[in-house]
Image (cartoon, rainbow, N blue to C red; front, side, top):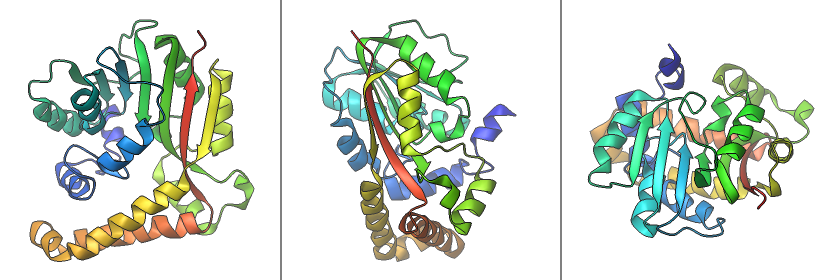
Amino acid sequence: SRSRMYDNNGQYTDHAIERYERIFGKAFISTGGLQSTVEVSSHLKTITHETNILDVGCGMGGSAFYFHDTFGASVLGLDLAPRMIQKGQGYTGDRQKVKLILSDVFQYELKSEEFSVVYSRDTILHIEAKDKLFELFFRVLKPNGQVLITDYCFRNDSENLGEEFTNYYKTSGYNLVSVADYGKLLEKAGFVNVKAIDFTDAFLRYLKAELELFKEQKDEILREFSESDYNYLIERWHKKLRMVDAGDMKWGLFVADKPE
């Protein structure tokens, strides 16, 4: 089924989600947790209580809660992983201005020029039709609205990808492009002032900090989970580090405006 595809072969089961939360913090499932959300969102022009944000691939709502609790913003979060949305709805509490919904962004009825910001973290790698998606983002943004994205990418000279990354990519089910091509796709959709930033140094910083945390908290992780969980996390992080060191795996940060 479609939602199972977005559980990514068991990547987003209850057990796996708890494992991610152990690393990234409650309600977060993406690199750097709250810290990277604060760092990435500093690239937005402005967020106030009047800002209306569409969060595509919102997971359990970590970023949505940050935007609401810090700035009073309204957030509509969409995600296709049932367990994450369920957990996120449980975490929402009495935040009237945050709605987390199990839906495909292409299926959900979004009005034109409804949002001041479209935000997406490490999600669009699941989507092949990036051109259609960026056209949709453009349509639902108000004039002068902003799009802010982080996503996994690969090196610009993709013909030089190493063996480990190539094998990983083949089995991942992801649809990646280079940082440069990502920026071009945003321009093609009509966005201006497009910044396509190779943000891999920040990714590396977070990966290394998370790895240190695993090692410091090994005993607690073993108490809560199992030896195989601990080993899985350590190996997965080392693999990411190797692919980043090889220059194959990139983390892109993308900021762009809809013209006035």
